[in-house]
Amino acid sequence: MAKTPNIPVARPQLSPRERELVLDCVDSAWISSLGRHILEFERSFAQFCGARYGVATSNGTTALHLVLAALGVGPGDEVLVPALTFVATAAAVAYTGARPVFLDSESATYNLDPALIERAVTPRTKGIIAVHIYGHPANMAPILEAAGRRGLWVVEDAAEAHGARVNLTSQGWQRVGSLAKAACFSFYGNKIITTGEGGMVLTDDQELVARLRLLRDHGMDPQRPYWHPVVGYNYRMTNLQAALGVAQVERIEAILAHKAAIAEQYNDRLAEVPGLRRPPAEPWARPVNWLYSLLVEPGFPLSRDDLRLFLLSQGVDSRPFFTPLHLLPPYHSGQSLPVAEDLSQRGISLPSGPAITPAEIDQVCQALAQAAEAAA
Image (cartoon, rainbow, N blue to C red; front, side, top):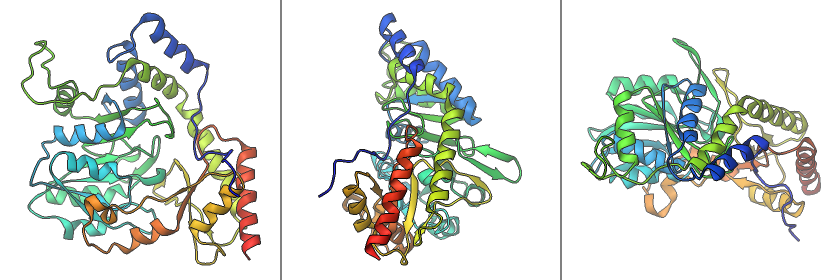
């Protein structure tokens, strides 16, 4: 019988500093969408990523929708997106009335395959959303090159990749969030740093920032209260959420170091368990392993789904890889995207949130070894 999981896939790492700043909001009564922590969170997170401006939002999905709206995406347009990603990437495109066009994955990184961009571009294509899936950066150099040739913008969906870096040969190592026209982040409770719910758009484009801020707050002219020249949205972050974010950014280097130690411990413990392919780490990338995400190879004696059931019987939670978006009813395209489909069937994410302990990782690895031995 399956146990109630005592090791969840992710739980946040919070400290007395988060409590201090949240209580500051409560004590001062600045708990809504105005307050000093919002501006500080925008500034500090943008600075950490190497971007000039940050625009905080209510969640990562609204960040994606907001930037697409600010870029003028609308009915009749197309946006290239990877098929293997969380559904919000496609949903944000659909919210604008545009059509997401799905591309297959690279087997090496699980991300959008840059070699497929050229053949997917049509006169209706406006841009590309490059997702850094499971914390490994997309191969941005060829993506940016292909976009530049076609006059397309690129938006990073960095919801799962806070702090990851890419070596762009012309500019050296850069953090995700500073590589394209704009970048979107999520700060949901299972992310590397969290505000409970929350998101942010980063960009170096001052005009785009002005448009983002206008649309984020009901389209209200900041110089003329209750004058709304455009249809906008209520996508604001609260000061309470931002207070959590400020405290998390103060500790982000320590959190990332702990995430690296989590991945290293898993790599060491699982090196002798055959049939499990460890997460990718290309030489041009410094991934952050948002979730420690394995592939179950044909040599492993259990299928991915049977392995998940065994882990649950040992009190260990897990997650399957995302279902490719071209297979979901709202976006069914009739395409065959074999790499994304194969990864989706074999991928499993293990407990690896910032608050996991070494003892818990040992317990997960023992369960994986037991699964292999019992099935064999």
